[in-house]
Length: 323
Image (cartoon, rainbow, N blue to C red):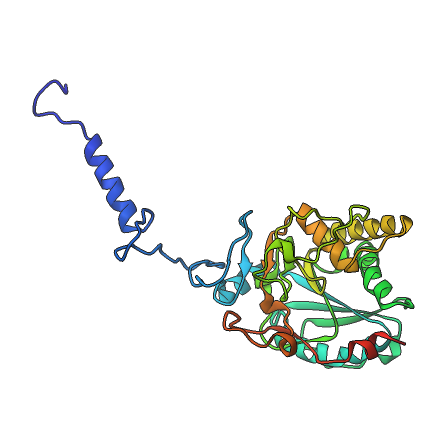
């Protein structure tokens, strides 16, 4: 009976002990020099080690930078699942000249230790060079037609990827990574990027306000994004996810481009404009930092980039794009 003066309620003691535990483990944090840091645990993705860059989107998807993931744990997890990754590139017309360097550097840096299937879309199958591949890695050449304008080649990528998702990719691989071919891998690109749907921050617009983004601004286009909307500006040269998600993305973008074509309009940045519209409406579950596509010749090497993983090969765009 608590009416006895020697009988005390345990509630104050419980509250005191609870607050003490919270403070000791960094859950309750106060400002000033005496602030306790939040604990960093050994998890696959850790947001603790980078304070100089944005590491989380407003919808709580991680943004992948060097220092925000533990590749050893991630490799263990993905090996247990025995996943396979498809890597698609388009080597149309003169762009076939970039395939050799692309593959040689991918063999050194892309998904090392995992099963990889390269898919080379080309109009010149005989010109695709032989490159020695490691164990568990294979290559398929997919013959497709060329288009007169480079813009059409770029836009038709969405249609071709969507088509081959149905014809092959759904049966052959678990994830698809879709990239440009006029690039080279220069550092590790691994399973830390894999997620149901991912996009990559455009290196020219990281840190810019949405007013600076070169979205399609004409309401007549299916890629239209109003000036008061937008999260990030994603580039068209590095995106992916699970095969079903990539199929949905590429099908939607292709259908939108066909609607624009029927209405006599072409989005300002072609398939990239439609990709940005899709990722605005269907939020990616992971976002890659500009480490994953960079042009060092144009942009140098700023301190916030600890690594340059996938970089542009210097070239004359006019000479490559024109017949």
